[in-house]
Length: 102
Image (cartoon, rainbow, N blue to C red; front, side):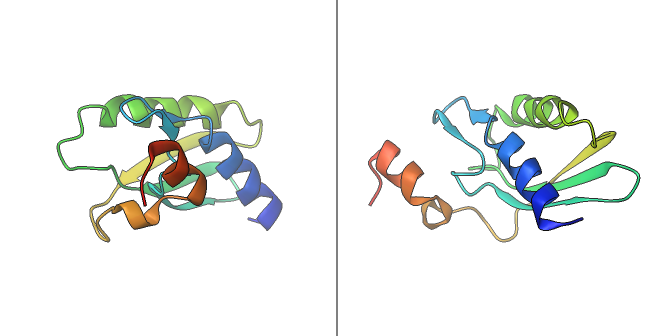
């Protein structure tokens, strides 16, 4: 997968908003990696803000829906991991400003 495709995938993921925080999963720092094989299968490795996040299934569904909009994507697998654990330090400057985090 080239950098242009990776950027396209990450751009699509920026459309997935965490409903509790109102910021996209990329700027929140929840997406750790995204990869696509030659067959069009995308693997997203990500975390959630907390282990008990009630919005997890909805976020996963929204990720699959957004990536399915890209013609190159044939299938999406979302892998939720807990290591490394998410922290506010993983957020982009934009997300920190929007949420008033220092």
